Length: 73
Image (cartoon, rainbow, N blue to C red):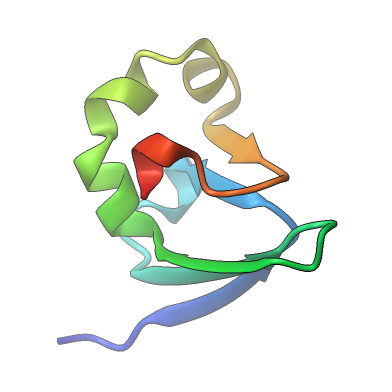
């Protein structure tokens, strides 16, 4: 198994540019809650949902600054 590329962000993000990068993303929200997730796993499990979102198609990403969405857990 290849090594995870650890990335720190200020919000939850699923981005077209990170697909296939084997990224483990960690972010801390304004309430000082820290979340971590495997970007490729979340994208793979929710690909149909993401590809149908206007924001993902227009901007190439979906973000949430407060938490990991329930559909991504």
